[in-house]
Amino acid sequence: MISDKVTNYCQAAGITISRFEKLCGIGNGSVGKWRKYKSSPSLATIYKIEKATGIPAYMWIEEDVI
Image 1 (cartoon, rainbow, N blue to C red):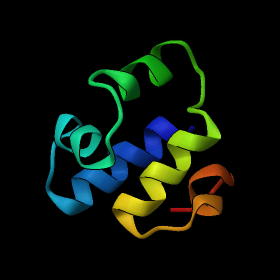
Image 2 (cartoon, one colour):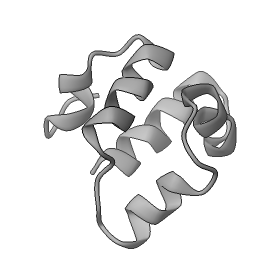
Image 3 (tube, rainbow, N blue to C red):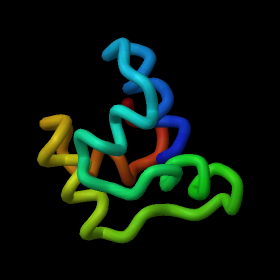
């Protein structure tokens, strides 16, 4: 799940999920909603994450990457 990848990224980067959301320009609590409802962000949101982290979009989407 993307929410797990975000959690791993934040731990490695030493930032909170809230800070991650702000850096990416996504709504506060978005990652928690993805986890709670077992959902995924839109493609537009994935591209925001890619731009903020420098990690290609496909790596956030594919299973067993990151």
